[in-house]
Amino acid sequence: MTALSTRASSKPPRPLGVALVGLGNYAKSELRPALEIAERCRLAGVVTGSKRKGQGWAHHFGFSPDSIYHYDEMERMADDPNIDIVYVVTPNAFHAEHSIRAAKAGKHVICEKPFTISVAEADAVIAACAAAGVKLSLGYRLHFDPHHIVLRNATTADEWGIPTTAEGALSFCLQGRPWRAQRELAGGGPLMDVGIYVVQAACMMRGEEAPVAVTARELPKTRPDDFRDVEEAIEWIMEFSDGFVCEASASYSESANYLNVQCADGWARLGPAFSYRGIKMETHQGPMRFEPVNQQARQMDDFARCISEDRESIVNGAMGRRDMVIIEAIYRAAQTGRREPVII
Image: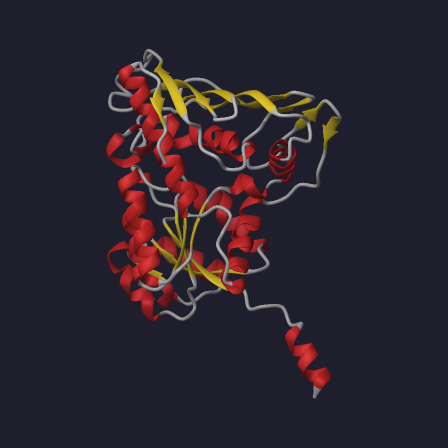
């Protein structure tokens, strides 16, 4: 009897069922392959405006066509026992609505970055998840990348001496005027979309502490028709309570992907720094090399463990809210031209 109980307890836990809300490029190119190799998660449903597209995903992953939902019927997921987690991957302006509806259906929530398009919306999502008794996590994949883990551990423990300065940028050339360049869908421009990675990295290096103040400058637009209601490029500086300063930029009209960190007794250079794969890291101690990982699979598997073990995700709603406070302060500083406090 004891031997049987021991064998039963060592059985791997049932993979949790994930439903993707939105089947756009990120879901298709990154989350789909991640779910094919995840150990603790499996794709169990989708929410899409295209029944035909949903059927293709159902056929590929082997889940029931009954677990294909339209956006206006997300509430029906409450009666679907195959779905444990809902991963919201729609345009930014829909993150709050879809996260709240998932929570009300009794499903745990992963929301892709940026969490929402305002602090007020972040508060609403956090409150909805708390009221429903479900867990909330954010799509902050780099917290599960070995390069960023090493950087976080070294800087938070002051292993290389106290971090003094950093500079980082993530930019790419956005063509035309897709949803990312429309305020009503994106909430903002490259700061909201990719600049958030630099914000994340800076806070990660100071033990998830937020900066105390920011200054910022929006750069002149070279394509004002394409970026008529969002910034095309922006630069900002984050000041932390211990004197650490991070200079950052994000743009839709150039290519950049790096993070340089200076500490009292050492340094690190990452380039590319924020990519899905192929991150490279040099330090004063030499290069850091790791076996390739799938960041998104590790991210989702960690959330599944959080649910099974009844603990909070390290990339939780409070972190997402913090980042929205910082982003709002950066936009405010760019508007006013003044040094703006960051009040969490």
